[in-house]
Amino acid sequence: MTLSEEQNELLLRHLNGQLGPDEEARVADLLRDNVIARAFLRSVAEQAVVVADVERLDQHKPQPAKVVTPVFRPWKWAVAAAAAFVLLAAFVIATTPPRHTVKVSDILGPCQYIAADGKVRDEVKVGTVLRVGDTIRTRSSSAWVKLDLNGGSLMTIAGRSRLRLLNVDGRRGFQLAYGNLWATVAQSLKGKAVSIQTPTSTVETKSAQFDIEVHSTTSIVRVNSGLANVERLADGQTVDVATDHQVIVPISRNRKFAVIRQPKPVNEWSCRLIASSGAVFGKWLQPDEKNSVRLGATPLLIGKKNTIFVASFSVQCSSSPPVLIESGSRVRIRGTTRTEGPIYFGITTQRIKGAFFGKYTAKIETGALGQAGEPWQVEVPLSQFKPKTKHLPGSPAGMELTDIWIVSREENAELEIHSVKFLPREVGQ
Amino acid sequence: MSQRDLVSAAAWLVVRNAHTAEDIFQNVALKAMTKGVQFESVGALMSWAFITARREGIDWLRRQKNAPVCLDETILELLEQEWADETLGQAGGRSQALRDCLEDLPAKSRDLLKRRYFDEHACEAVAEQLGARLDAIYKRLSRLHQTLKKCIETKLEQQVG
Picture 1 (cartoon, rainbow over the protein chains, first blue to last red):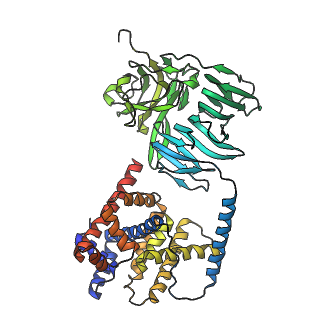
Picture 2: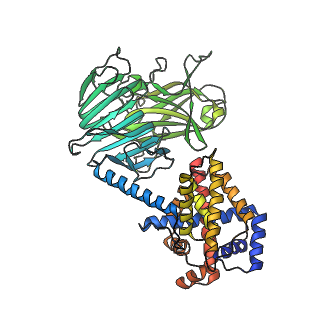
Picture 3: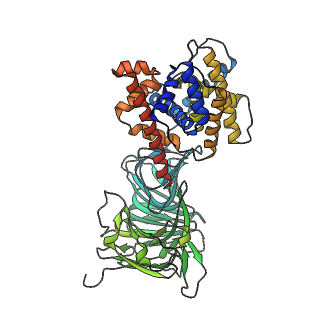
């Protein structure tokens, strides 16, 4: 059921205040009986106030309350007192040292912004400025956010990550609760160090290019250039991590905490599912007759009424050396799905000894998965992976593999993964 | 829609002036704070806010000369009830979606909306300013409102999908 053009215009004429009594009666009847007419009128009212609000903001001249009759009302004193308080607060804020901010410079995929006052925004735009206390989350495996720290310093968080701006004395403080972060900290930040807290460590640097992968009980810090100081929170022990070095920071003080040189890259990776260290997102399932290792996809709410089911595998967490992506590389995955429907393979890439590069995905059609409920093995050549954004080259060859993830949109698919391999190009290719 | 936008919109339906509607919303917010009223739920708060805004709007109308004819209160109650139901549903993203849709509008369309709802010109005055017929202005406004409504729905669907 829709309204006719004539009915819409009748409602607009009513709002314009020019109708005679008969037409007003028609409007009243229409609104009493017709839910669509009421919805239209409500949407006009919403649009009218928002148009005025947007124009007010655009013109930088907030409209004062229009006083129609100059009658004294006590509450106006309350407004005046509140205004005075706001002015005083503004003065106090203006005279306290500025806290650091970062600006969102690029964004892809579902993200969430949680302001320091608890206000949540599910849509984040380029240009959004984050202040101390604000949090930004990238909510799905394929998402990323790039942040400009001013003065040539940059950060990227990607995958399922959560970053908050902290108030740390004399430093630009951050908290990476979980996920992946790549940072380039330039020396021009007026000598102020960047300090990143994770559940197990604090990483500080005045100038470095580095990346951090954070899970609840481990943080892995790799420094590609410059120098970073890393503190293990469990015992306060600190180490300096120099160019081409890395350190794993466990939550336990009984485990090794030592800086090592970054291993040389290899061109293949078999995720050690049995040791379980490479699987970073998913739930372990009981072994069955056919598979001793089964990782089930875990639901991930990436927006309102939008859930995907994900299993994710990290190269670094599996204790592998860095994995170089070549033009003929292939991803081979074994698993099962209980319903017919496509699944998606994704890879995260970064520059060798460098910053975040981008994400690539491949859609696996039902035909490639065989009969529902039966184990499948799918091998996807690198050429079938498509970049998530236009600015990325068609192939990530020459980059480093950060992680591999597998996604189903169907809960009933009960996606489970038994093996994840990244294979080199075939001999003779 | 945000609660602020909804209460302002409800007030606007009575007074048909966006600036006065904003004033009324501020009065309602002030009352809620200064009277220290406790509400058991968001629904109860919104119901109180709609009634208070409507009364303030009707009082304002009574003080005006040539005030527009106000809708019957039973109809206003129906509209408010539908708004209140929306508040409990997935209304949160609509305010931002509407703002985004406004940004996407061509300059000419946005100018028309500005003249009508920010500058508060009657449709006759807008027609005169733009050198257009009154009927044409109603048609353009009607289509613009429908376009924005559809745009919001599309953006919300995209967020969900």
